[in-house]
Image 1 (cartoon, rainbow, N blue to C red):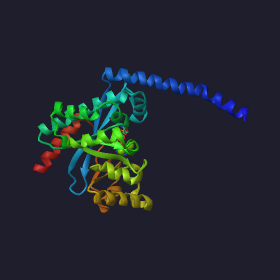
Image 2: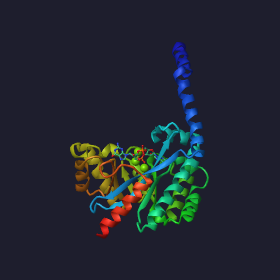
Image 3: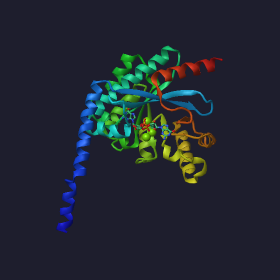
Image 4: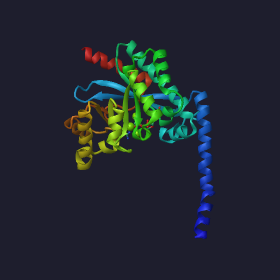
Length: 282
Ligand code: C2E
Ligand code: MG
Ligand code: MG
Ligand code: MG
């Protein structure tokens, strides 16, 4: 017994653990520096209405290019930004950039929504709703063109402050989406209380949908649920025509994935907006 716990204690101080901790600390310091030195930028991934094939909007995805030119994946730096609290400042920067960009589209005559990912920590620290109101005012973006995405994990804490913040945001006329739906703690009570405008079906259910009965059953149920609750259904991570056809047959509203468009540089997204406008005017 003593030997076992002794081994556990030793494992806690093992060189690999120390390396992991110091790597995180290093990353955290680099994050603060990166924000100050403007190493972050956004990419925008298009979303389309399935039935009409029309461009519906974009999701803003954060990118970090280090001075040596290497890209760090959000899967790696977002958790560190969340744990360290850097996410509140970083998230606000994303929101400001995204709203400014979408306002530019409006100036070009395109009313397209911009979706922005929001971490739980942003909703529990300070008055995020007031920040959103300020950013909308400063950018001049109509609130209905902004959609904020939260994951089910965020809704676990759907009480007190988080509930208040989300209700306030909704009252501004901003849209809300539940991201990666089905992968977290998908209590239907959360869905009912949160009442998002959009349900984003996680890629893990969409992938190979046409020949996986279980995935097809889950996706079909989510689409039906969303429709009956007057919510938009969006399939994430669509990569093949076969998946798209299956989603259309199931009545899914919108789609986002490598098949219909990879994340684009801000200028390329604007070019796509103008191209689509020209196509629909023709
Ligand atoms: P997410 O919000 O679910 O974003 C969708 C992710 O799926 C993006 O990864 C996107 O590039 C990727 N994706 C889109 N279509 C496809 C496809 O067809 N196939 C595959 N394999 N992947 C596809 P990305 O950009 O690496 O972001 C990963 C996650 O990091 C995001 O997942 C989101 O949770 C988080 N994230 C990104 N930007 C932000 C941000 O500004 N704030 C916060 N809080 N989180 C962010
Ligand atoms: Mg998202
Ligand atoms: Mg997602
Ligand atoms: Mg995801």
